[in-house]
Length: 439
Image (tube, rainbow, N blue to C red; front, side, top):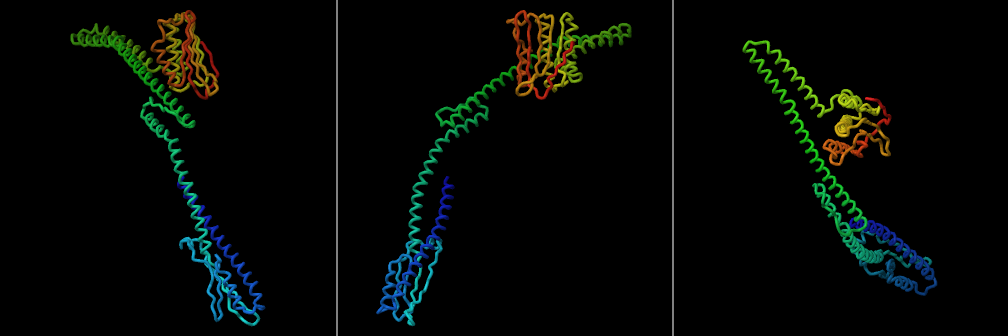
């Protein structure tokens, strides 16, 4: 604002300077014109005057005290001193800045054939410049008395009004450092109060998200530890005995060879082969838990069909129906794996806990207002979920996985009416056409 004030003052000073120069010029031209008319009128009567020099002296004397002119009579035996104003009170630099120099005009005085000399008119701009200087100084004083307190008042008022922004900047810095407990309090102007409320809501949401992330990390660590424990148990209970048996059979084969007995070797070799087949099955099962076998090679529909076939061979009394979206054949590795795990967990829970007579699996795409949503359902008509069993780690892990993808997983159950597992995952640009087939 001080810069704007200085620029305004400079612009106003330039305009005032131009106007002042024009005003002085106009004032001096008017004064010279009036003096010429007066002198012309007076000299017209000199032919009838009894004493023309005396009348000329009185004419020149009549200009004494004129603010803009200095008038003198020359060219006669008796010089008449010039008449005019007192020196200007304006400083010399201001006079030079206005830049209006004095001008001189000579009017010869003749009566008949006789010359009475010349009347010299000299303009004196100093007094007009002095008047402008006085007015300019008064204007500057009034402007300063008005502007400087105004700038000071605005500085104080706006400074107080914007002071909360300093607190907001500090609070944002703490948010950036991870401290989501910070809040802004106190009375503020309406505009800043809305900003404060928005900041507090955002900080609260960030605090909630941070707490949720901590909970998810703890849950993830728990699930990872559980998975590691299960793998360790499987390696110890299932793989360890077969490796021990292979080691025993290999040692026996080596002993029989040293003793030169070949007949028992065939039995031990067959035992090793049998143990290796069991190990292969166990390792294949572990790999399937870590990464769905056949999902990338066969596609989503075939992989889910294999899951249904896996359970059909073990529980042929249950009817399985699978409906998979016809397009696309894949939703991407992350979504395909999530769908596979949801169906895997849903089928496993239904077969092991609900004792159903039919299980339906659906993977469809629904159009929504803001895009499309992938809907995965696993429904059975079994006994339902009892309160004492509740949601296990498997479903809890699936729920967190779906939530991380921006979706939601719900479990609906009534005793005696089965369980419906529904996962909704946002997708973009998918065909909602569906293909139903019996697996």
